[in-house]
Length: 223
Image 1 (tube, rainbow, N blue to C red):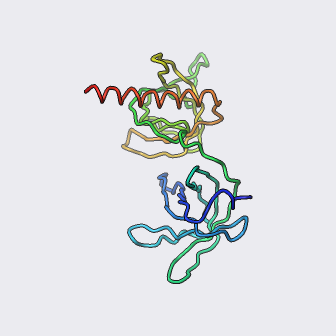
Image 2 (image 1 turned 30 degrees about the vertical axis):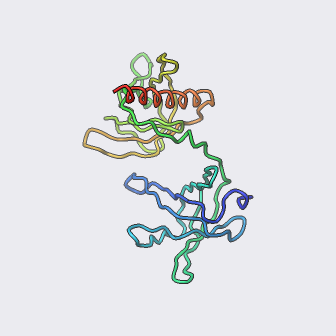
Image 3 (image 1 turned 30 degrees about the horizontal axis):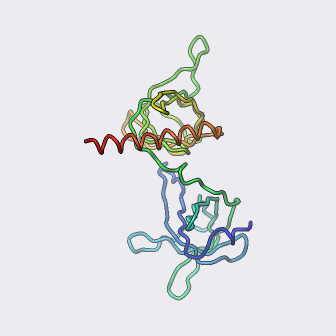
């Protein structure tokens, strides 16, 4: 896959997966060496000074953080080994490396009223929109709270405000539910990613995020 020229020994690796309870779990590791073009040896992740023996055959999303860029791909744990009292895992690449734009994953914390449409329609066949609250936004997706119970992997529509050049506008985007977390009996937290988002719309979202950051800094400096 030509990964040898992309990721180097010592680069940070973040392995992530969503467990059965719907929570996302991350494991931090480092690149040790390449086994061949399709396999890599990385350090066994640790937590509280204890090794975490990731299960052989389990698949993860991997984010590789190099000195200049970030890359992501899907991997599978194919072996666990011990060398000189240290533990390592062998991972197999399941997809090509994809460069990650860092600014897409900068998350703006916020509290903003939004609308969601999960597919229901009224008697006039018009889509039914429900209220929700967005709690963060990035160029890759958002998190929001809602009373509606929505299944993981479902695609829905979200309508949310952005402000560009001091002008407010609303965007309607299709998103995919990737994480569902029950907060209370009547409230759920969702993490979603934008699905097939046009580049110009993504650029609008990213521009809004950085303009909002600048507005917040100005307000803070005046206080």
